[in-house]
Amino acid sequence: MFVLRSLLYALIQAVTTVFFSLFALFTFPMGRVPRNRLLALWARFMTWLARHLLGIRYRVEGLEALPPGPLILLSKHQSAWETIAFQVIFPPLCFVLKKELLRIPFFGWGLAMTSPIAIDRSAGREALREIEIQGKARLGAGLWVVIFPEGTRVRPGESGKYNIGGAWLAAKTGVPVVPIAHNAGRLWPKNALFKRPGEITVALGPLIQTQGRKAGEINAEVEAWIEARMRQL
Image 1 (cartoon, rainbow, N blue to C red):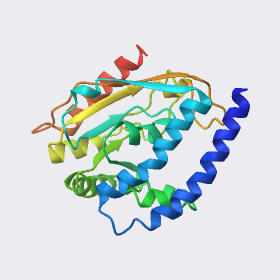
Image 2 (image 1 turned 60 degrees about the horizontal axis):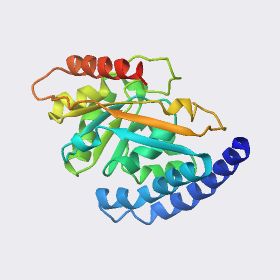
Image 3 (image 1 turned 135 degrees about the vertical axis):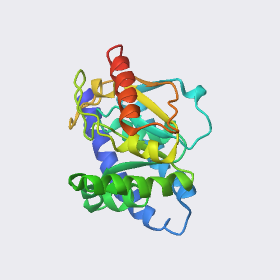
Image 4 (image 1 turned 30 degrees about the vertical axis):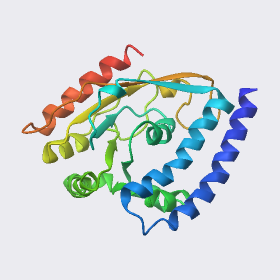
């Protein structure tokens, strides 16, 4: 039964993505925060559908301790689930992502309307500069910024190299960081069509102050907390 439910979910996701991507183009005159709040309705629908069709629930630990923000969220990346659900869990936000995603028909068009920080990962220092410039603009506009330090999705039980981009932005802006661990990959695996029912835990770490600190120091603290918490999930 979960196979049929997964296929139906994928079909609905594809159809609604086309609709919302076209709808997103008409939101261009709006400000970044109200536009992202409106476009997050798609994420709310898909998260609701995941619960009622796929049986995928979630719980969040530590959300009540967060200050108003905006904040920089540095998260584990295991699946596509968190890119959808984070838009529901947190205030209006944007993601740091690779530029290539914006070239995907329909999906990329809608994604571009969410004010992402699009970078060329192979650009080295120039990519860090883009994260800093665009990140300051997004934070200044009131958007929270989500960065996956490992850069790509990793399977449960694995970890990748923690890139310094998110910590760099935090060090340059002094904006506090929230480390995030979760086990979404258990139910919604990387590149998998079929999903399994169950409960996902999203654990938010203690607020990390970044004023006057070096990016490498911040990055190490983020990695240590996330990986330690992942071993408990």
